[in-house]
Length: 336
Image (cartoon, rainbow, N blue to C red):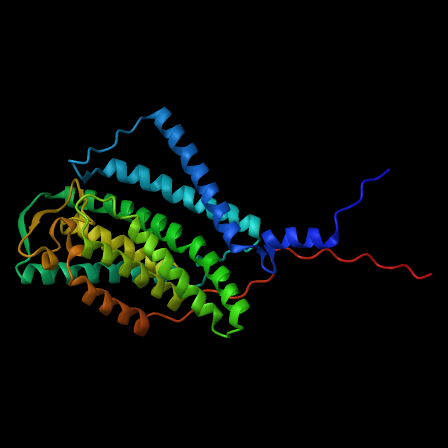
């Protein structure tokens, strides 16, 4: 005697809990992505520590070594991209999530240029205002090119990792999930931008919380991290691509940490070009946080937002994709 099959309504409800018109529902996709990422990072860290144990830097010494930066950021960037690739196979979305587009190389190079210009403008303003003192040069000759190049690679990896993790798969997927909720609740034609910017605020707040453990961080510094998150989201919404944000993130950090030798969210790097120290009011100088802790960063990010809106090409970041899971065709009914 065969067991009775589940009621069609029960099967439909259970399936709808996990799968919608666009495939796996956004919440479960993000949860699965984070699980895959955590497993990959945990496995890679375990293997790396077995091969070559890495001692964590003591909190009293906040200097970041070049070797640790290159190995750690390379591992994190690789595991993030691998997790995103696995999710793209599961969701069958191909090159979505902001990585495609014909202009990605141009956008990346443009981001590199503007990141260096904007951080230079901020540091120059602090120096001219007497809020930053350049003490002496620390590198000479070929060491400038050698360490400058290696740190640039390191911070490109930082840009790939942080932008991919916080504004890659998760932002794209959260956008489609929140947009679906807006569409369901009010049938608004503006569900996509509402979904994107709601997701942007949430993820920028999480990005901000991720910096609270940095030594020397300050309230203004945390505010600037949140604003920087929204700034990067603006570039993604404008261009439809992550690549400008990745480039800009890389040289912004490289300019602070290597070129000008200032703290980056309270962290200093070894083998930097200059020795510097802040001077005067922390709200203007940035204090131990570095230039990102100065209220002047709000003006620089405002200028950068104008650069995004008036110089970058307009692209489409999110479109309603075709259903990731196609319904099975109904069997043909034979004629009697």
